[in-house]
Image 1 (tube, rainbow, N blue to C red):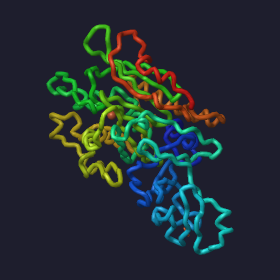
Image 2: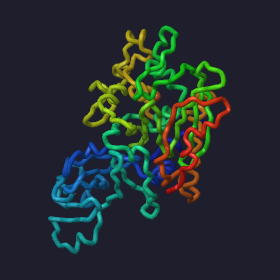
Image 3: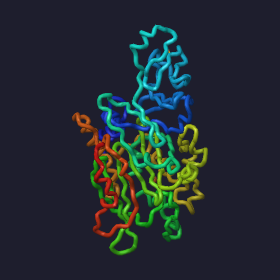
Image 4: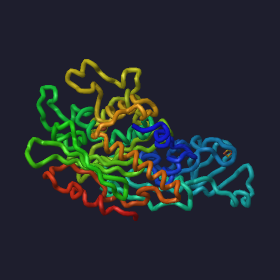
Length: 422
Ligand code: FES
Ligand SMILES: [Fe+2]
């Protein structure tokens, strides 16, 4: 349980809030590369931490991220023309390049005027199929943290974005909650549950495919430079050995979840207090088909996911697509891993009040998420850098392995202890 005050502190991310100030100290994904598919493609409205931006790709393929409203008199640049090396406002034709240089001001053509100005553009990187921006204080811009998926061959990686209408922390907590996997994702985690028989799910791409049906994992947690790592230990029916699933929490909202042949990196980026862009990056040592991942996640029905806008469109209007007749064979009556996770997070409401919950030991990693986020906020308030900012994340991943009782679970992911600021 969390008191109301801490709940508000953790969940509110707009400008001027303590969490918002802490979050602004990191680089954030603002869209996928595929959302700006070619030079001079249409600009994209972007909402991040309660503020509005526009992203565009210029004639040379470079990406710019600027405040959405034109510095002249505030027309949305997302309606603008993208042409000849810049973004041009429709209203009076002012034109800007990706770094904010004012290239033209047709209604006041004297170059001495525009040379004195700079449009509000932000540092941008394009890495791993995502566009990243830094919108925090200029003088505190951190090193860019590289993730393992950025090192993967593009054919061995696929990137998805799903926009979900609830607070980021509900989605983060779901991701750091090992004990829900064997229950909410029962169909994939424990096929055969209906007949009380456990059969492992052979799908090497499915991160909900557990190797055991122990529903009461024992958790162990250790602090790391990027946040923490934890292990969920499950009985597998053999003396002296357990299944160990190691998952990291990367401050402020990242995790990696293991499938047997791929890793799922998930970033729950807050658009504002009640909207989140979930980025799922799947990578491994073999080709991965986006269509297969979309199906696995349950997003292959246009009623529930709009591939153009990336919106998760399931609502209470049809109970998120839940089919009660199907529930005789299917635990949730829902469609797939992400539909199950997103429907649960939405069912908690736009911003859940944690003062009413009742936690158990299986919720320890969830509690730890809150603690490390609150620590990070307090560090920023004290004039210190937030937790894990600028850390090299290339060695950070997840695993699902067997571990002898008493064995050092931390040895399963040795790079987690070595991760340090770049
Ligand atoms: S408002 Fe953009 S050019 Fe005038
Ligand atoms: Fe889940």
